[in-house]
Image 1 (cartoon, rainbow, N blue to C red):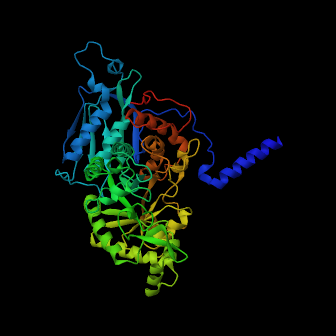
Image 2 (cartoon, rainbow, N blue to C red):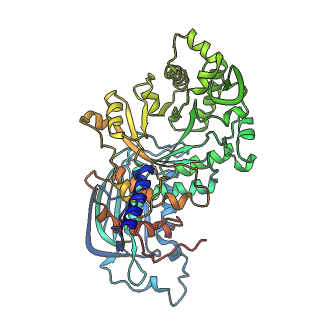
Image 3 (cartoon, rainbow, N blue to C red):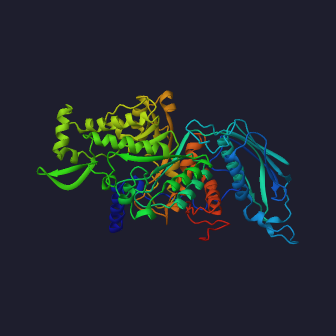
Length: 548
């Protein structure tokens, strides 16, 4: 008994050193019976009834009664396939239909969903979602005609997703839906997911599949951490040698301009913004393979030692390059915002370089290398301002004292985020939370409930004005241990917990109540081709993923 006790204590101590994210989780959601036709994320006002209607692809239609455009037309085609799928492929001339076409005992049929968008929707393919997009909608499911009303096409997209989730298979396989009324809108206007394509290259197909999953969970920002120390897979028109020399394996591991346009368009049609991150001055080793004198040369005993540090902030040529490079980025990515990084900058190489230390003396910075970092970021922010772009930054930029624009968005990612959120918003800046949503920190068991419990309004003594400056958050899947083989299954449905937290009412906090809906939602994702991993322990889906 004593040996066992010591063993248990040692295991616990080891896991505690690793951090709370590694502690085993009590699996109290085992056996959560999936709901039928209940949506995820939960709408703000959701009023279902026991009255049931049936749907048949032969008689059902979507009818657009307001503004329309390519975004809405494409969405209706998608949801026809999502809702009916193989049902619509049955030859109506057959005398005996498969079981899902059998007689339904429902109270009536839903033959039509009228979709009414009130605002004009740009039909030229230039209609991009933004931070200020209106995603509210009202949905009424009734027989024979149902109705979806939204101010904008972005709200219509969210309403179509909810409508598709309300539909389920009856006991005989027929499609059914309950009489329901919904008034819905997101709690936060920024609901993001970060994928890292620099530590492992992610194919365009995988990125698009992830965008599909994001739409199924009402996320609206794809934070594309596209380059880093390890590789530079972004194809620059002005500096093509950067990907030629900095990517893992040439063109096969590079995002061409056509690839990027494809990803951005796939996202646009699903109401998702694409915000690229080009992190500087640190995390830039791959940049220096092609751009001479961009990185700081590190010294030992007064001589270059062959290593390189962050971007050299002391050279005018640095800012000439950055102006050209980010000028191109601003044209390639249509969103108003660019993520500029600014995190984890090591000062040791700067400290060793005699040219940099001479520059420090010239600028009267003394030995305050945080002030040198501020100098660099200030110059970069001036460049971005000249391009009429907004920017996001990691919290270190603020922590190190840089002066930024009032509309800057600060992403809080470190521990102690409650105090950091209070600090950032007290300074008047908009804030995002990602600290508690690092999905790459996996744990055995139902770890989604930990993500579900975290909230962007968890801050120390925040006023209402400060709470209003928190515009949302994002889940992060860093790429050290994920690639095309597992990034989708490791991300989903765990990210769905973050999706509901950022969309639904703040009172929707009970993980035990959410577990049955999570079980249904996981099966829903699987049926739609998303390899969503089990998260509630032993269970099954009626339509299992078959690896094709």
